[in-house]
Image (tube, rainbow, N blue to C red; front, side):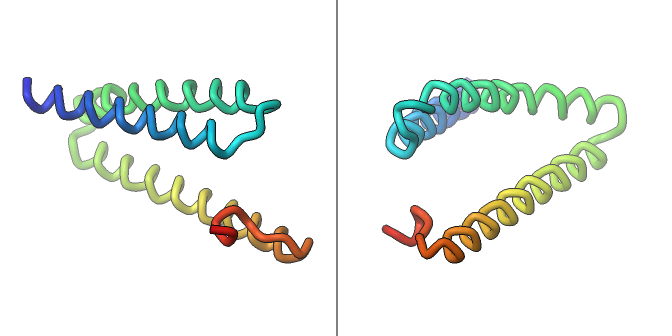
Length: 102
């Protein structure tokens, strides 16, 4: 019971932090669309443990762990490339990204 409570608190804290970040960083005209996408991806993420448990039952825990690692690395790579391209475009236009303004 204690672990479930801690995981639930962690999920809730991440959800609230993400929504507050969206509110602070998106313009009002697109905030609804961004919030909807955030909820969609959040609930897909809530399904991830169940999907990985099903994969582990069928193929073994090793395969499920490797699948998780590959997906995490792919996600990090896509995020890094997108950030790098965004910074390059900002530099070419003579503007700076939000991270550089802080």
